[in-house]
Image (cartoon, rainbow, N blue to C red):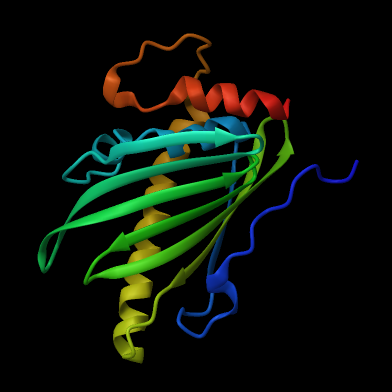
Amino acid sequence: VEPSYEIPEIPEINTDDYTDFYKSTYTVKTAIQEMGENSVDPAHFRYVHGTDEVAVCEEYTTDGPTSKMLSSQKYVTPQGVVDGRIDSYASGPGFSEVRFDMPGVVEACLLGCATPIDAETVEQRFNFKVKKTGDEKLDAVMADAFVAEINKQLTEDIPIWEHKAHLEKPALIDTDGPFMAYRKWASQFY
């Protein structure tokens, strides 16, 4: 059948204010929902990826096929601790727009495109655009470092996704994020 919803237009795609796309593709032996649950798990960034702070989920809302998760994050940078953001907008289970904002360091947009290959395999494509500063050499260094870090984090998640057991009623605590709200939203796509 024809799609029942549209994905949004992303302004960064057609502007000279951002770099060209940095692209990467991964094939992961998991279900698409398992990968999506990562987006509502701010605590895992500290314990899986070694960030100094756990992001704070400020808002998680859904509206039909779309969801929005807004979170603040403290980043330790060469310039000191920076108050930043990671805001994620999903259109169905296969498309997400993730905005990273680390003031004075980097501003980036990641388009995550997940395609189920079969019931147990997902192709995950990451498409990054990083805001230009006006210094081409600095832009390249920042973009390369940022993209490498996010790709490193994805590869750290793969063994978890590929060995994770799906529990219908997981034991959760307050800092675990809105898993059950995500699962309720995701259930409309089955």
